[in-house]
Amino acid sequence: MNKFVVLTLTSILLAGSHIAEAEDLVIVDWEQTRFNELDTNKNGALDNIEFRGTTRDWMTKAGLSEEKQIKQTNNKFKNYDANKDNNVTLEEFVITQRMNNARVKENKASANNKQAAKKPANNHADSLLQIGDIAPYYLGTDKDGNKVNVDELKGKIVVVSFWVSWCKPCKTGLGILENLQNKIGRDFLQVVAINYKESHRSYNKLKKQLSAMNLTLTHDKRGTISKKYGVEKAPHLFIIGKDGRIIFMESKYNNTPVNAIVEVLKKELTS
Image 1 (cartoon, rainbow, N blue to C red):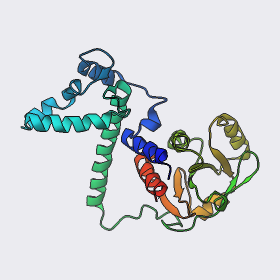
Image 2 (tube, rainbow, N blue to C red):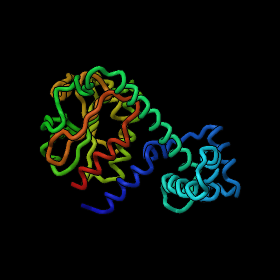
Image 3 (cartoon, rainbow, N blue to C red):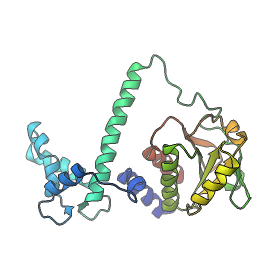
């Protein structure tokens, strides 16, 4: 396994949603204000001393010793410092902060769901496939008219995303998946984005709009591909391992589960 690929995945995971948001990051006023308050040197980056301002108040109130405060804050600083240059930029600060907030919300929601559940939930009840199943081989035809088959992609990881144009999480997800593919390389990972049941006319317009994207686009007008995958709505995402078997699938999300996807990819690429 290429060590660079493993390191790239690790950096993606540490950066969290950085891969999803870096290009179109919109920083709101309160985020800029908070960063400016911490940036006492006014150089546009936080060193580890300035970064103490993110933890000093609550750690002091919690009664932590100075030694523990420094140790825990330094660990937090390393998490924010995605570029590993001993400085946290505004972008790193905002992205990691958002990632941490999202993780807290996700953990709370997960805990609430576990408490409310009377029996184990089946997140894939609407799918015919289960983890470990051999993936249906046919994924449609690409923009050049070539058939896209899982069998011909064995040895690579294949991400299959069913999407529709009016679904915001779907469209956002395409950009995230493209970034992942570009970071890891098509020799290791290929994304196949399957348009779900839209008309030929609409799909042809969408192909032109998305022509600059480095993705394999196919069209499931009649729903024959989605039927074999047990897909009844979009978004619906599958990850197919190097041996052609399903290793991940998810459909109940409003935001593409980047961290979960990266974890799966990292495990599969290093196996």
